[in-house]
Image (tube, rainbow, N blue to C red; front, side, top):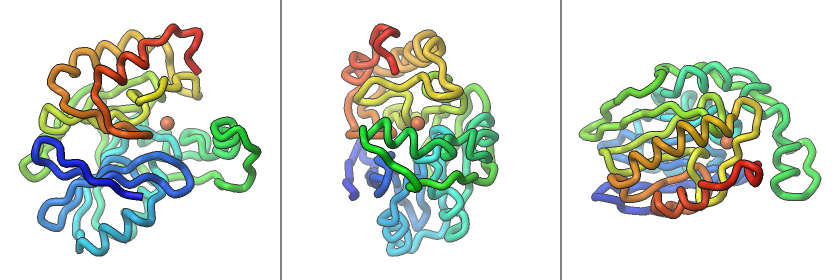
Length: 232
Ligand SMILES: [Fe+2]
């Protein structure tokens, strides 16, 4: 499934995974694509092929299997430069670190139905470029500001495009963020991630989350200022 949103003049195409419901966001300019996350979307691959894409810059929001699933496929098919936090890069190289080794259990919990054999543990090659803390990249005329996070997973990061569009991964969602997966931290989510999102929110026109529909930061923050005892 794909859907297009035009935000501050930038056309953002949203592809939802076919098995998992993680989302990839694609921006195309002059046969180059800027992509946030590599969800399991064959429709995205078809779109990139039909758009005659030559070069891809792929930013990963975190190491979980549903967000990195197509990363190596994109590298095999296109000239693709993968960028992530250092921690994400190191964790996605093992099935334990990217949680694909326990994917069936997580999907069963999420869907309240027993799933087995849906995902075989897999690994993804290291990122081509990594960052720590905060940094910026340029792509065509756009500026991407990267912020490392630590709530949802140890390798999480969010990306602010042109100071006004937030790609938040699984650290800010239209539902309560899960902070209790291995490597996640409820404390960091409360003490570091939420204050960062609060500081960004006035400049952000729209949040494009790792799952679900785009929305405004105020609404997603309201849902996520949840007492810790209710947090998964
Ligand atoms: Fe995740």
